[in-house]
Image (cartoon, rainbow, N blue to C red; front, side, top):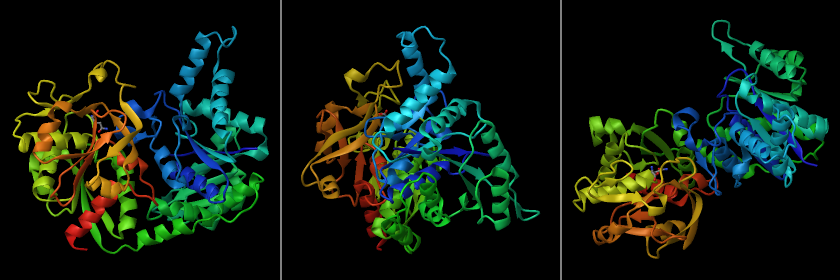
Length: 532
Ligand code: GLN
């Protein structure tokens, strides 16, 4: 019998419900329960693909090409697993499925309603995934009380009725602020939020109380009393240095232990040594390198979450701290490449649209000419090609047709079959595709394999007509798409300390115990450059 744990949020958003859910999943998996995580996003978008990273942070991409909420990235990294598009349930997906069924006449003349048709659809989607697992953690996005999340909370409530109380538990993540003047932790917002949840028929089994400092005993008692949750299930989740500490903190606080008991699962000691080891290693790094990320969404660092994480994985593996210098590409356009002075490595990440492209190319040129370790990703790969065309091949005004459709040298262009741009959703090359790696290249040395599978999210490609010219000038295309040899996947520049760019997004597959090779190589090269 599968056990379900629903994670809801109260008071404010941004409390780290995603990390709490990922950690809980990890703690269950560490107890050898077959565990998975589902994210519910109550917005009307079908998926995260068309959303601006400024609102929800990065769009994460799965093997199957699903463009999903960044929490799925956290789940994949914390549980060291690969998820599918079905693990992200949105209002958009649920309603389209319901309307499609209605059009096909599947409801046999019934009036189609939120209850039961929409709630049934939600429950079905959760149960479909549950089949192969002992424990399923379902995080419900948003905060309790939002109109959008109502059908999901109702579906969760029904699931407890149908699956039995012993098989469904609720964890509510809330905020316990400390008022500076009185210096006291305030439990009232938590009380209110639990009241709201209970008015929807859901009694939480555990409260994860987010606060700056450890929860005071008096606050714990009060929360327990007012929310009807036993004291041992009021979990203090105080601020920690790094998200990797969260599973260990929650384990200490007894969250998973309590939930296994509550759900009648056998009590087991979790296997957390390896995780604790990297947390310890990460904390004790002494020397550091500085890597610049030159992007266009740098004000919200969650826009580049997986890149940050990939750097962290490589940092532990290389035994050196990585400091990130966030640089807005447009600032380089104004102030010049001096903003990059002193960095040990440069990343130009993925992106869309014209803003900041010239600044990104200045950064690429700087890395190329000054022999600074460089990694270009997706749009960063394409702009590396454009920069090379302009400044090495001398093709003035060369560009990607995404940015300048009239360019005399369209060195980055759409493949003929991808030219219908009227539909922006669903026309990209998405998800994992094979890449063939050429022998005797940096790519081969980094990956140690001839065929790799990496995740993609793009439309434009290096224009095949220019490839020979690039190669004659010394650029090496060391990775070619395994399914279509017209498509270039990796480029590198022999003779440079470390200069590599990928059409795919290596950051999405980077894991704490398995850093993405091109990130690992970047940090290693930065370290060497600095003489560490
Ligand atoms: N805008 C580019 C394309 O669509 C790159 C996309 C990206 O960086 N993810 O091909």
